[in-house]
Amino acid sequence: MEESVFRSRRYWAVLAALAVGLCVLFVGRHRERAVYHTDDGVVWTTGYHIVYSSPSPLADSIQAVLARVDASASVYNEQSLVSRINRNDTLQPDSLFTRLYNCSWTIYWLSGGSYDPTVMPLVEAWGFGHDLRAEPTQAQLDSILPYVGMKRTRLAGGVLTKDDPRTQFDFSSIAKGLAVDEVGRMLERNGVKNYLVEIGGEVLARGVNQQGAPWHVSVDLPLSQADSVVHSSAVVLTIDSLAVATSGNYRKFRDRPAGERVSHIIDPLTGRGQVSNLLSVTIVAPDCMTADAWATACMAMGLERTRAMMERVDNLGVMTISTDDDGNWVVWSNHRFASLAVQ
Image (cartoon, rainbow, N blue to C red; front, side, top):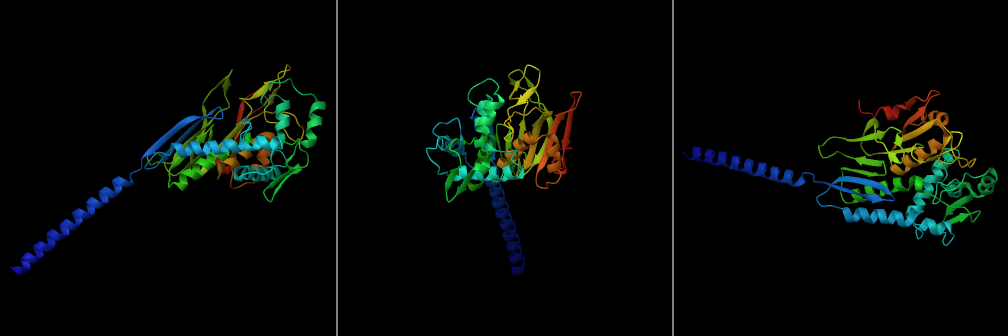
């Protein structure tokens, strides 16, 4: 009888322990269930869209990151660090400027000088900067080229040196990429493991979305109508811990009377805007600043040089959209890019 009672008590004790265990497991999973937040807004005249899983919203921290990037890298902010460096008010960069400079130097060297953030005087001369101007003459371009070039600058010991004080920096081609990376770093410092950060079409994603599936990113076809942007997908990519950036000449350009379309992406070696059949380049890279820089570099290099270089690169995905002699679109991608496309 006593043995029977003992067994009965042990039976109920085991059931109680299982019940408590299941309850703890349920509560634990309930607490760990991801809560996704969305933050949308406008910065640098373009939109941003940020989705992330976190117990509490981080909107204030996102704004702080964007403000810090603006204070360092925006050429449209007269009090920013890059604006003061361009005026030679200071030659002491902060950590963000240093990252922009070092990334630019790397892509400048690898691209044979096709990527160069010191083209700002040329961009202004062509009317793609603050003011719309007539097309510059060759004499005007020749007068500017002597102080354009990363090779005419150095950064060592926390001090920036220019061979010519007229040299100016414009990091607009990678500042959005830097901002995307910085928001991602902030989210990760706060324990966020699942997020998508998009600023002006430049994207960084990690983990999974609200449905627990990988993040999908659509790459636009090079379409535009008058002053409006047309969004139509060329391809959808699956990305995790990767960044995507696109550069093109189909939204910002000037038309010549003869019908030629001159891109806003200036060749720093010649000082001239690109007249090319290459419409857009999309790059997939481990970080968004690198993707941003390479997308611009490839647009400056042109179709053939881009294909030749990217066929030899393993850690970068690339897709180009160009036109043939009949005006038909031609889409090309390397193996890395194709492996990420949703079938």
